[in-house]
Length: 66
Image 1 (cartoon, rainbow, N blue to C red):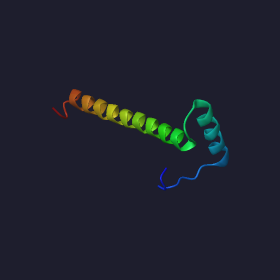
Image 2 (image 1 turned 45 degrees about the horizontal axis):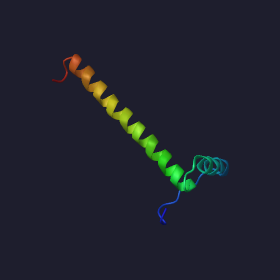
Image 3 (image 1 turned 45 degrees about the vertical axis):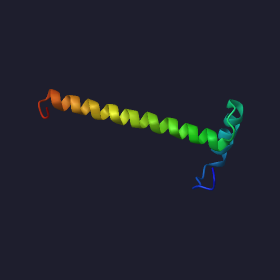
């Protein structure tokens, strides 16, 4: 995308991504990979926030924080 940093992928994985991108109607394999990475990062960040909330809740329950 616009000459930004490049990422190397295994040829077989790239071929699978290209095939899926075509079948799913993405404009390009880059679009599919960007969408997939964004989705995974959001999910990971959400889990991290939930983990922090759970730790805070436990520490409050144990009386370590108010």
